[in-house]
Amino acid sequence: MAGNLPEYYFRVRENGAFVFRVDTENRQRRIEMDQIAVINIRNGQIKPHGERDLSEDDLEVIRSWMEERTALLARRDIDDIHRAVDYLNMTTHWVQARASDEQLDEVTDALLLAMHDLRTVLVRKKADRLTQTD
Image 1 (cartoon, rainbow, N blue to C red):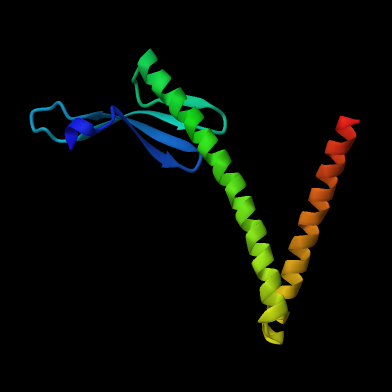
Image 2: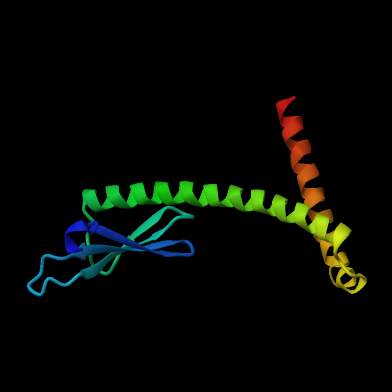
């Protein structure tokens, strides 16, 4: 297993990751992970861990990971929105075909407010886009 391990490991956190250098070249042949940096995807910050100096190779690997991670998160965001459209369609079918009066009483106001809010924002954003292209 040790021969197939990457040189770096990224422990994902909400805004980025902790970066570790993976070492298997020690006397006990154990996997050791030495933290070398903390990165923040939102602001692009790369902070060396402790008094460590990051090499250009370290920075290149970290920047590459940040680009890949940002692209992955963007793909996930749009996928979540497509799923939300599916959920809205399934909710519509549930309301029309299976919901009891008690269930509708429980969710109607929350759904109407959320849909009104979403519609308002979507209409405003579409109007902004249309006026920008004119």
